[in-house]
Image 1 (cartoon, rainbow, N blue to C red):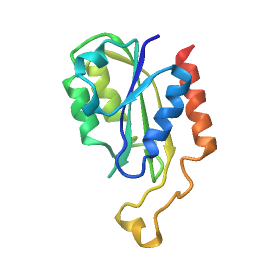
Image 2 (cartoon, rainbow, N blue to C red; image 1 turned 90 degrees about the horizontal axis):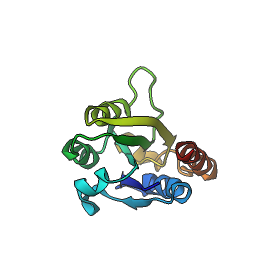
Image 3 (tube, one colour; image 1 turned 120 degrees about the vertical axis):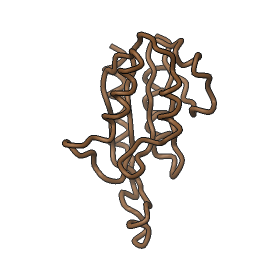
Image 4 (cartoon, rainbow, N blue to C red; image 1 turned 60 degrees about the horizontal axis):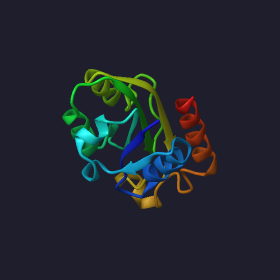
Length: 150
């Protein structure tokens, strides 16, 4: 299975670490949106799209990349890291899932985990989730990827 992970990880490398853990299981390449052509992404059997969360939103670079994808059929998944938990009534992954589905992709799941965050209100105390993603988070990411590979 030809797999690609498109990942925007700009603050502390949290999302990239999660993407690399998933890539180990999927035999995938991890790239930033700027490092891959939109047409190349469409040529894979499974594509993961991930970023850190900024003000309850996925990163703008990743969203712009997905908007540029040609309509096609294929499999996709979404992953994210965030300082605060995803809220059940307003999940930050939902807009990206809907965007991918609008491009014709079957979204097979989402994965989120907490991560080190130094966003403005947390900066005075040195940030939150200083040890995350931790070994347990990366194990969970690998398990999620394993289910996608089945």
